[in-house]
Image 1 (cartoon, rainbow over the protein chains, first blue to last red):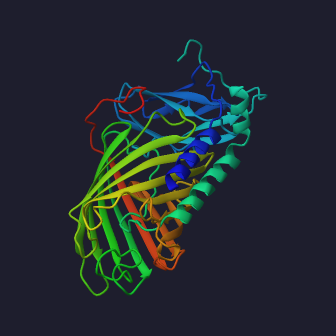
Image 2: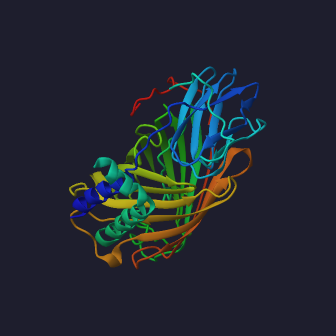
Length: 127
Length: 289
């Protein structure tokens, strides 16, 4: 009986979370170089899943981390990672390099679709 | 049809999740009892220790109000649980972006006695895919407990398996680790698997200080639940966050919810992580390694 209950709960858990995810075709990019992230403020569209590419162009290891987004990953020099994010509510979300306290924090700003200030990713930066 | 169904589920996302977790907790409480690991009042998230990082952690739990007889409450051996201090040291290393390995040494100090070695453990833990690829982030956990000393546990060697589930709703993370334990040597090795649970609601408020609720429960054998009165179930309101120099803490006071539980447990976990060098290259876009 407990096993059946567990199977049922696992299945309902999956179904409950089965939301459609259609990431956008272009990927915004954050680049780490010269001991700082660029851009330090990344504008994205709220309300839809997205991916962000983080490129480490420096010669030092970094740990890209966002407390508010619950993301954390080590990036070796010259490597890049892709961070998948769910649909964000409008607001600001921190990110920082957890290996270096003196690197200025950045922020991802999610704005609603009708805002005119959304910074589109650079052309040609397709996944 | 499938899209409509998915949209329906999406609309009910939070509510369904709460219901599922609630059902899960209810079933766990209603059918099981027993295996609570007092050396590790910790809920494992989906994310693993990042590749190349070593993490040293000390887990501490003091039974402020427990039982006076051996084998009751969290005490599985001859010492009473009252005023018992459980102390563990854990060294974890991120093998890849998705798999970590850990070694533990467990100690205990019964009331009126000195600190004594209680056993050791080895663990592999991993996560499947990247975050948000699946509707629910899923991980896995395999642990081998060995050389346990009979004064603290009459099972000599145990295998523990856990699936790990996590789902984030904004700043709220819901985590669940159902536990399946099998005694491989020592008392109870003829029996089947025991069932337990570890779960939490963690809210990310600030990096320094965040609140949470953690749930720990014991379970008897999967096919033979113990009476509810002898089961152990605990609720821990906790605070957690980051201290200067990269130290991370988790502090909580746990209340036993059944007569078989210890009445009051205070836990304090502290961890420090440093990059020591990666053995393997960065993981690709796969699902396991």
